[in-house]
Amino acid sequence: MLAMIDMWAHRTELGYFKAESPKPVMLYCNKPFICQIDSYQTTSTLPESSGVALRLEGEDGKVSISGGPNLKASQAYPRDFGIGMRKLYTKHETKVKEDAEKLLSELRASPMDHPMGCALDLLDPVLGAFWDDANLKPVFALLQQMLVQRASAP
Image: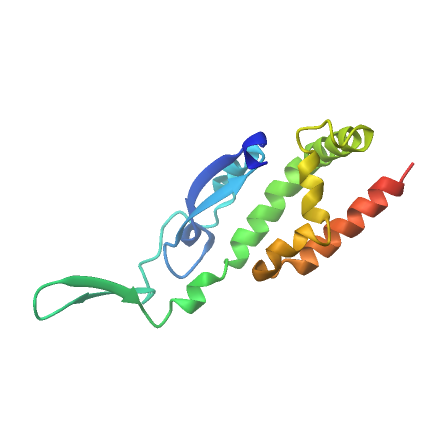
């Protein structure tokens, strides 16, 4: 199914959004505008690493890397990144919604003939159970609710 969806990837550093470490991340999106996220950076300099990773050298001279005391805190997205993502989405929201409505109309018209017809399987309560370990039940519940609302709309 994913082969049927155009995907864009963009590498950025959360340090440019005021994270405590440089924290490089790869972002994936089905819209090309993801590559514009850097225009919402809130600082122009990357911070030094702050104990996220430790470089250790053993007595034998071998170097190893292990998680430092601040590793767990680095797993959260910085607030400025969330604000940037919201601004980026808001800038393109109309087009995203138009594309979603078009796809939904095509699926409603002939779900089995559409190449994305299998996407509806993700919203199926039985097939959706394959995702239980990802703790996405609230997300799928919302998607199911939205699908029902959209399908019943005139």
